[in-house]
Length: 144
Ligand SMILES: [Zn+2]
Image (cartoon, rainbow, N blue to C red; front, side, top):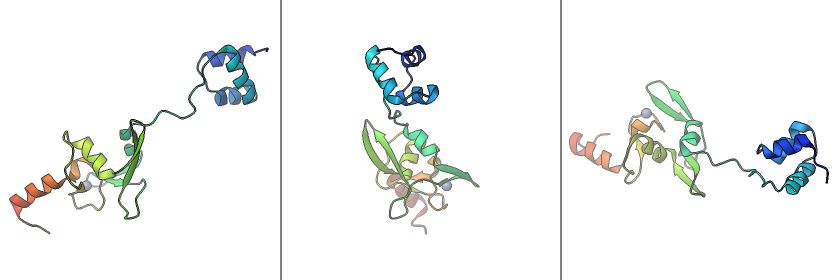
């Protein structure tokens, strides 16, 4: 088969079938045929999974007082949830738990909740786990 030189060039440069078809105004099937004829492997159509930091950052909004407001998905209880892939497995975690990891070096124990008083804050430095709450209670007694 005859392969257009511009198609071949973009294929060799690693462009996707869809991208080439759009850029050159040719039919996608033509690009796919050319790809096969040239023996160039297909470019994965799914973009690489975004790291959780990126997913998280795209869904927060800074508010006064250094708090972070969650603008992303919430579960049926209204809890901020982050959906992200860990080694190919889709995981649902509370944004609190994800935020915790950005601000601490150890894994959280028990429930992670904001301890700053701003409702549903997801600022990493404002997260508290069971261990921290227990420590505060030991120092200050049972507060509100
Ligand atoms: Zn806060």
